[in-house]
Structure formats: C-alpha cells, structure tokens
Amino acid sequence: MDVAPDLASLAGRDIVVIGGGVGGLSTACYLADAGADVTLLERNEQLGGRASVMERDGFRFDMGPSWYLMPDVFERFFAHFDRDVSDYYELNRLDPHYRIQWKDGDSLDLAPDVETNVERFEQYEDGAGDALRSYLDESEYTYEVGMEHFVYEDRPRLRDYLDPEVGKRAQGLALLGSMQDHVEDYFDHPKLQQVMQYTLVFLGGSPHNTPALYNLMSHVDFDLGVYYPEGGLAAVIDGLVDLGAELGVEYRAGADVQQIHGQRGGFKVDYAAADPAEFAPSDRHEGWRVDSGGYELADLVVSDADYAHTEQALLPENKRQYSEAYWDSRTYAPSAFLLYMGVEGDLPELAHHTLVLPTEWDQHFETIFDEPAWPEDPAYYLCAPSKTDDSVAPEGHSNLFALVPIAPGLDDDEETREAYRETVLDDIAENTDTDLRDRIVVEETFSVSEFGARYNSMQGSALGLAHTLRQTALLRPSHASSEVDGLYFTGSYTTPGIGVPMCLISGQLTAEAMSDREA
Image 1 (cartoon, rainbow, N blue to C red):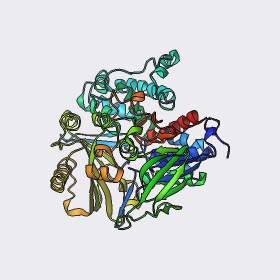
Image 2: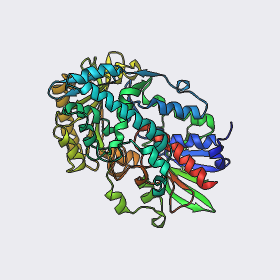
Image 3: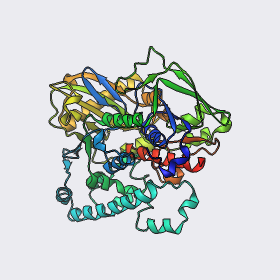
Image 4: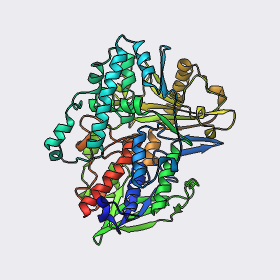
C-alpha cells in the first residue's frame, strides 16, 4: 500500500497506542497505513472505549454513544484507506430523526425533510419557519468553513490564528458570544430555542457556556441527518477494528498500562495483566491477544487514555505538562446516570431517540455546571434501538436505556442510585406514558463511579473536557507533549474535541502532528 506523503516519516517506526477508544483506533489505522509497526494496548475486555457493548440474556446494549451523526466524516475516514463505509456496516436514516417530549405534554418529531420541520416550527411562532431556513443556511456555511479550515486543520498555537488567510476564512462565522445569545437572535419561543440547543449535550456544555460557533451542529442535525448503523454503534467499532487489523495493527486486551518510561531514545511502556477473576475477554474481535503483562519498547507512544490520567498516573512529575491544579480547574463535560433495561413487550409511545425535556431547563444545567447536585426535574434521553433493529433484543422484548446528564464528581453511592432510579422510572411513566416497572427483565446501571473505574475518567466525566469558550481549539490540551519528545495524545481531550466523529478526526490530526515532528 502506498505511504501517504504527509505521514511518510512514520514508516518503519515501532509505535504503541495506549487505549482503544475511537481516537486510539483511528490513530492506529493512520499510523499502520503509513507503514509503522503499531501495537495497541487496551486495559478492558473489548475495544471502543466508551463505545463499549453490554450483552445480557439476549439483549445487546450500546453502553455509550448511540447517535450516528456527521456521516461525511466517516465516509472521508474510510476513503483515506480506499474503503467505503458500506464495506463494514450498513446505515439506515431514522424517521423521525428523534422526538422531543416536553413535560407539559407537548411533543415534536424532527423529520428528515427540512420543509416538514419548517412547517412544524411555524406552528410554534409566526416567522419561525423562515428563521429556521436562515439559521440552517448559516449553520451550513459555518460547518463547511469550520470543518475544512478549523477542524481538519489543527491550529495549536496562537500565531496559527494571526495569519490573514485565517481571518479571511473566519469572516461570517459566529466566533464570539454564547449559543444562548445566538439562538435568541432567531427564535423567541423557548421550546424552539431548546430544539436548536439540545445538541450541546453532545458537546458537554450548556447554552450559556458553549461558543456560538457550534451552531454548526444544527446543520449536522437537520441537513446531514441522524442514522442508525445496523448492529448499533458496536458495528462501527467493529469496522474500525477490522480496518486496523487489515492494515497490520496488533491488538492486546487486558493490558493495563502502569507507566511510561524513557528508554534508549525511545520508550518502555509497562503494563499489568487484567485480573483473570474480573476479566472476561470479548469474542467480538478476532485477533485479540489476551496478555499476561510485561512491557513494550517503542520509538513513539500515543495515549488515547484519559489525558489527565496519562499525565498524573503514567508519567513522573517532572515529565508532566500540566499540574494537578490545572486539571482540577478545568470544566468537565457531564457525567451520566445510565439505566439499561430489557423490557417485555413493545414501546409504542417512544421513538428510536426520544428527548424528555422540562419546559424550563436552565435549572438542570445549573445542577451540572454551577451548583452540582442530582437534578430534581431532569432532562434526559431515551434510546430504544429495538424499534429499528430486531437483533438487539429477544423476540417479544424491547431494548431501552435512559441517560440523565449529571454533574461530574457527584457521589453515586448505592442508596443514591436506587433512589434516583425510582425518580427516573416515575418521570418516564408520567411524561411518556410508558410504565416500565413490571416489565423489566434485565437491568443494569452505570454512572460516575463506573466512568472513573472503567475509563480512568477525570471526575467520572462521560465525555472529557467540555467545549466552553475557554476550552475550544488551541485552548484544549495539545496533541504533542511539550515535556516528552515522542509522546503524543489523541481523543476527546485534544482537538477537535468531544464525540465519535471528532475523535475519528483526532486520529488524523495526531498522526499528522507526529509526522511533522518526527520528519
């Protein structure tokens, strides 16, 4: 296979990738395609990071990401390797894209057809249909310019933004102000404002702390569409794993990295084997080697583990770029209270994706970012993939999970979780007319503690660093360590940021940063 010219300097290098989340899998593919010898070490029993899978009694749950957005990013990724998305999984466009169920009884289905949505917006506010068209025109422009010149092109230094050409490309983009201010310029009705802002949850922010630049997400949502890959997001992970294997990536399960050392101009990466009593390797991925522990020697290292964990736990103090105080001062994206349920019967009242929202949701965001607490009147998300995919639940049953965004770092002891389970089930019954209690045959919870234990996540965040005004673009941690030559980072803490498509792009940006520095 031809070596991509911009990555040619990586050919023949021995590279260890720590962590098999989407960023790690993507980076490994680019490096192997460039001719590097790549070994990926994953501490858990399966690849995918937060996009893990849980299987119980015939039910299969996507444990983390469940929305397939920005299909163009996946198409561009696979095309780099002369492949098509369809070589690995099939996509279905959802109709409706999703349902918003307000707690006053009102509901709105967002359709794949923009003109249908224009008509539905107009029912809430005179002129809102034309406002939606105008908003989406701006969103499309922001997306096209932003993706090509500010997402796929990494600009890690201030001087990268002082180029007159950058200023020219940025003209017309809503770079300043918050999403709240921006959306208010188009819509007065609070429900329509919520519709245009809900995607901020995917960015780990609120309407008041997320830059207006992220209006681009509405183009993603309304124009590019919401899809479901057959088999769920697990099918996407399997596709990334299979591609990496085809390119020569070697995967190792149960390899819990303990320390990164400098070693004769390169690195020695020590790792411990998983405890056999706690480790049951997944059979989803062929070619896994379940390791007994040891070390790997490498010319270069890439970490897709939690950035703060890598610096604070895997490196000696004198090799860290950021202090403990730095990490403590960051704004983290929400954690989540997740309730996975296998349910008898159908769920006719729900769409594949259903968002249940209070008519006033500022209080919920305040309990996440301002005064951390378990929200009393939660905004939450319900995913029922069995409405689209029969393979995720046994016949006569439904697959459902509830996700409540909560503040990172909350105490989630057993008593608190049990009480909140009751709150969530009560709320679902009251606001979606779906009473689940006597129908649940399989049930698992996942929250702050598990995000910390399974993923070494700072404060148990479900996503990483939020996309606040002070944590966007060059203000996010760098792909290249400033203290350790040859050490790099990928994934949601780096640019371009949070979400499966962004982590996929981070693999490209990390590989390019490595090639530039190692040339």
